[in-house]
Image (cartoon, rainbow, N blue to C red):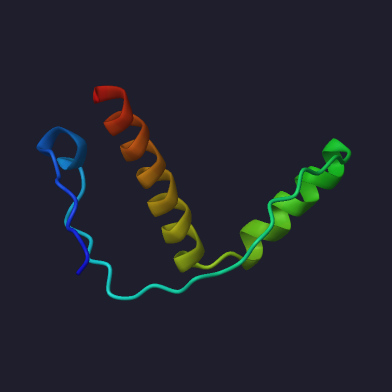
Length: 76
């Protein structure tokens, strides 16, 4: 049985309820890259052209979870 995490109103008051309906495990490796600024700019432009709305949602949820965890850790 999965435990439902406790929520506190001050951490979640700015967001509507988001329900997780499925999960999929993925393996990935985060690369440390070095490149010229113009190469970086080109890749950013390219990424923005191919990124989907779901990509942006995943980024936002991942970032929100990181902030939630850091804030929760700071209060304990």
